[in-house]
Image (cartoon, rainbow, N blue to C red):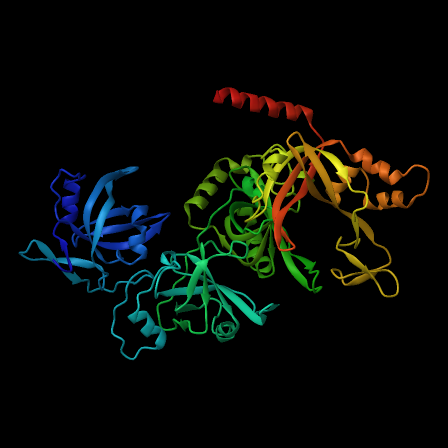
Length: 604
């Protein structure tokens, strides 16, 4: 029956908790209510007008939802399903639908039943107000509404999670949660301008939208931080992982024909912040990567506000450090900058004795003191969030954490473990593993540990550069005398030398070239760049410079390395950079070999 659900459909489902090919299939039609994505599946409440029941659609039906065949507030016919108990709630059940078909598209609202003599139920919309979400259809009369309101009332609003590059027309309702600056560029196609915004819908899903040239000039002033907009006539493509700033597989491009209308007369919403927490003891793999991470922890301490001089413009900016701990019994220092330091940082200082739980979204992971975290312009700090993770962490801290001995995540990391490392004995590979996989590091740098010999150091290479004694950046000779540092914007009469050199390394499986910078090169050669330069300039029967290089060869080291891709003469090739060097610990090497032997015995 058109626009009808089956009378007592949910009761029928509960009395026929499983169907198979030999059973008589009752004709059951239900309404889809509160459709939402959970991982790669969708959940909803199956409604027959009298009763509701939790239900789940498998990942195989995702395409039906994305295409719009199955819609929130629409009707579906159940063809195959099973009924299961909800874990921990034996009296509650949910329905796992393995096969169904769409009967009708979205109705005006959630329905309630008005029972008649027929076998079905004629739908009667609820009289009370029903709040509409971003994934529901809004079918209302246009009247004399404003343009944004007309867009809301005549077009279905799609949740961001349902968008893909193959869809036709769509409209989204989103809040601007970050707005970039207008940037100019100059390439082979000429000059242009570009800016981007980060958009968040009411379900907390984010996407980055980019505008170029005419579109950038058209929409730059229209988009304002914190305001809600209806957007349509944009395009989507796979996100460039190198530049994306939000967790979304796609990015949006708006052109000058796209429609952007402020939802000024519509009900506003506060986007739910979605976190993807990384435990503190796992932060090492993110050091100096482009990925931004989210963290949750108990506040251990809060520092007073400090003023730091920014190198590029000498402006003084406020900074405050807070120390967080979690159940891994590790701590990490988070640097709050600018308004976060003076605003929410002061709030945390006032309540530090109560050890609040805070969740921070979009943090950059650096290598200061081994591992450190820093806020950026789009970072978001939530104090005592109402989430299961926060409640669990607070319970742990109150029960045992406050009496537990904590250690800093970077304390066990020497300079050999400052980048992407937890231990010199993690991710151990032979050189052949790297050289035989030329695509390693294509998407982002990957980290390994290896044991190898220095087999050759080219004596005629450029082994160092002149560096500022304050910031270690490269300096140039001043016009009159001394050296000019662009970073510090000052001239000094003296500079220091810092290594930047290539070394050939070998093991039993092959050989390759490593790039080594100052701290690591000093450990390899056993002297500073200034000392080696003095040896090079000395005259005598014995060439002390060559002798020093020879002494460094055929010595074995443990290396922590990163593998990335660089383009040279339009050709991509591997770049292997030494991130840390340490001498061989033969006791640890023996334990590693015994562990490998034990694993091999187990697998036999």
